[in-house]
Image 1 (cartoon, rainbow, N blue to C red):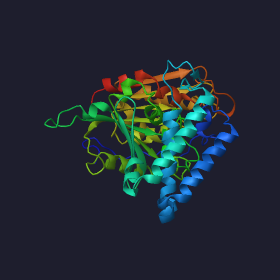
Image 2: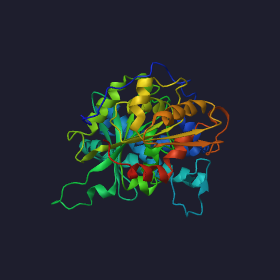
Image 3: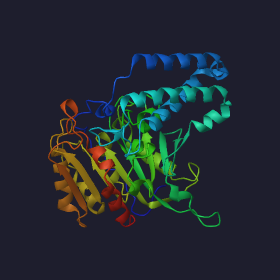
Image 4: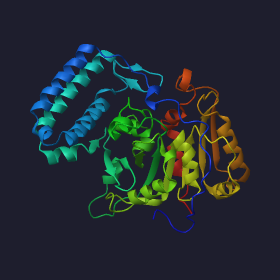
Length: 385
């Protein structure tokens, strides 16, 4: 189990968010049209390689997923440039992307190189490589799967391997990231790690692209489960996520020691709404919730359970998907009963990422993800009692 002692049964809030996200989170990230001939070239290259690839003739379905995962990581590496790049341009998300034409060429060349590697690598090597990515700065991201619950991206910081072989492995705080609603019908690398994926701008894509604040990248183990085939985690049994967290903390899932008294939660949109329910189990040392979407008032039992849980809430007053009154009501309930007075509320007057139209204001998950102060705050909190 994740924790003992004060661990409680979850208090489920019998209602739904004010509405499911009427958007694909990836739409919150600017994109550019690609020249048609570049895409034709990429498709031609890919078809030639696949047609002659013995892996495809042996089992096309398996290699197709590998190709998609590899190409997703090519996009991650090719679309993000250093901040001092003269060809870089700043987008409304605050993330720098390479000049569009330059990025297109790099991406197409990367796809070609990737498919060539796939065509000559043995099947076992492909399986291993497709599950792991080395991150700029020394961290590692890999795909892990609990067959009974979820697949996830698991990030380990460079500090996790700094100890000598004779010393016990360093115990790390674990940050569980719950994404918001979306189609969720592509592979996990494409949707969570790709800076232009469905859940772009959140913690996993920041880590994968080397853009995460060092307060996060150097100090936390991060796990981001993926609700594949579901609109969001809100459609799943709550116990399924708790079971997944138990699994990720087990030695069977990974060879790193998780500090089970310092497990934190980060939730955006539907992930934030569900996350507050999960906090009532008292398994977590603290949480950041952005764009919380429950329109009602918390049950009294939930309020009592959350009295000692540190929570930092983010919301924008112009959120057109989940109104800011959802977070206003949540914070009022928590501050009225929180005996340790450790509830914070960052309430923006307007969208910090410049989103407009049908997604206006619904970007606080991105804003919070790249805010160094939230990670400093988590590290300053005492272990869960």
